[in-house]
Length: 69
Image (cartoon, rainbow, N blue to C red; front, top):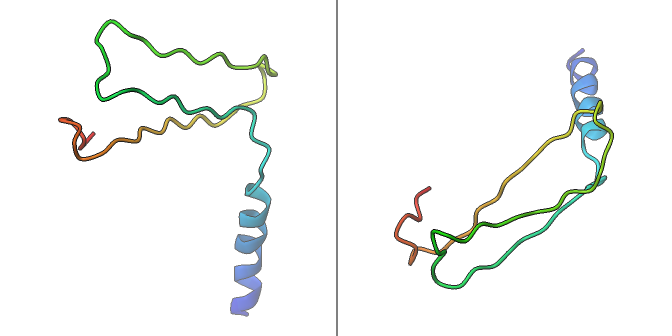
């Protein structure tokens, strides 16, 4: 009986895992990020009705003064 309850969870988890990534890009900066410098990412035109997930990743080292973002 427990197996029957677990099957829908496993099925949903497998369906949610896709590698249909639309856009991915990293931009490296030197030791400091100047206050007047902005980073821009140009995204491709996509369907405006379909919802998409957006992930923003910030990578830094302990040398960065505010590394505990």
